[in-house]
Length: 81
Length: 429
Image (cartoon, rainbow over all chains, first blue to last red; front, side, top):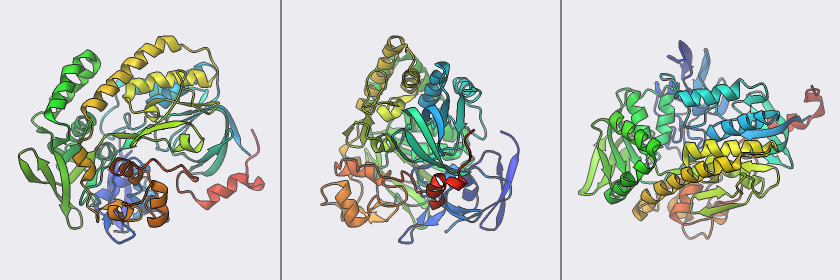
């Protein structure tokens, strides 16, 4: 892998290596990816698509698993932290 | 309109890659599915910084450059039965038909709840390893790796290589069990060399056996781990706590198809014969889904399953001895790294057990099984569909696994409807 991709996390511009996951990009901005049903802060647990704790909104689509998607140039991600 | 394949292989880790390559060599047209955006499974997950080992690159090239194998990444199986499955990917839903199916869905980590385990910064051990490979900002971060098994050392080595400051590896198995393991490992020279290489890469990182993490502390995110040490409790300030108690086979697809399984707590495995055939005709299983045994066993079983699924005369005899040896090593690991009963009971009654629905352990105690607990408390009813809390409950309360239900993963309604609506289906090729 070579090069970088640029995206926006909660309005902040970030740059990550090509091949980086959305989770890796979000982690550059916040540790809190979402709030649980009772309002407690959560971040990734499993890193492999099992636990659904890393859910974020990607380009307007809610509940995407940040660990399962690679960052694309121009991607806009919103956490619920 | 359904797309047709002779064989579908679910999972593109070592077992699935080997199965697809073998089935293709036998002349079948194959779809190789994986939920991840890349092939390789967990063990051969690509790193943004380092190349994969040569063996992994070789297997990936053989599968992905094969004209008979269509790799479909980012594809989740939502439902399956009667030679057909419904899948979802970035392009929406699709119906795939198969004459034979190889289930090579691998394994996930076993998590045992403890106070504070829902704090951001607390991850799986393999979990943080996977995140770091894909660019998680781990350089310079203080990391404690904990839980059990050789995977902890592999995770710690990967994290260090990506720049993490690994403060300690906390292994729950007692020193006497670890010594028993080290005495036996030279019988498997390849694994012995791997162990030595790992030890070298870990340098001066302390390996603390017979200890476990009892709690995580922090307000919004993790600040410190509380360790139950052999000489009393102590705290380690850290940014990440990566805890894994071994692996749990991903058996949901096999359960949905009605394959016979056997279970010992969270270790539920698909039962097969020597040609990897499950109890359901035309459905085969290979690798960790048959019981966790590592990469060597997965490669051999995948190859056997691939030939069998393609209906080819298969070199079972040649492979059977190697397979038995790989499985014996798995049994050695299982014995030496057996769980200390205390790590099953770290959660208090008010510790969250089901992280999707925020159900505490106390709410679930007193129910006879996972199903009644779910109906009464919503435990296991959230987005992960019990994949995390189900295994924990099997360990803590001895609950048998709940049956699989559709959809196997949360799915967009359009993905359920479109594949069955004639005017949106593509014409056959």
